[in-house]
Image (cartoon, rainbow, N blue to C red; front, side, top):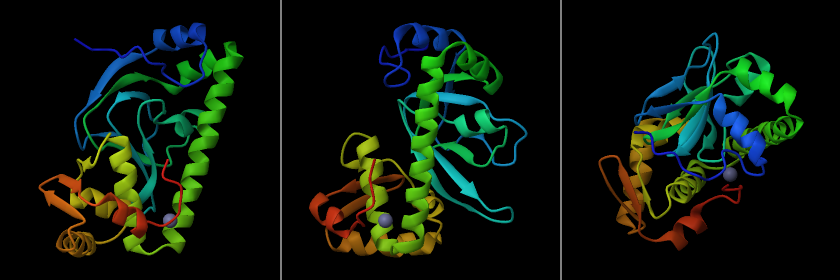
Amino acid sequence: MFAESSSPLLPGLESADQDALRAICAPRTLSRGEAFYIQGDETAGLLFPRSGLMRSSAGVADGEGVLAALIGPGGIVGLSAALTGRVCDSATALTEVVGLTTDGARLRRLAAERPGLALILAGVAAGQTAESQEELACYARHRIEQRLARLLLRLAAHMGGSEVLVTQDDLADMLAVQRTTVTALASRLKDAGILAYARGRIRILDRERIVRLACGCPQT
Ligand SMILES: [Zn+2]
């Protein structure tokens, strides 16, 4: 049985729009590591996560990607593809994700009938563009130690505590560095008593020092 949360699908959405949106959605669960769509697919579905965390990565044609956005409850996965018709990122579940799914054509038809919904969607799309721009600036300007510390803080905030369920491979993918680079950095932080890790799980032991290590880029 799909346990649906009563919290709003999108912050600020009026209840009539909320109900209309739910009416075009179906439940969907993704297991940890499962791809929702891949960059270059012909079409991509939309997902409104109700629990868990998705990552969107933008890649180059002949190589790996870099993190574009982290999307949890209140966000939308696949919105850009739905609005533009181009699948320019890959969306993968970082944790188990339970949510609601629909397709771009249905969402566009509904938004054409409901200006309140259209405005909220435009706001979410603008927010995601801003987040991608912040990621790009951070990637270009800040050292890997700073970026790793910031990413750990963001993941911890999304996962609701000091424990982050993520593998070093995931971290390396999101930061667009070699796995060995992440392993060396994590090992230094472990030796310094700042974090502990076991397979697929990182615990932040000294949050203050992680905050000092992180760059000043937004963490939301
Ligand atoms: Zn930064």
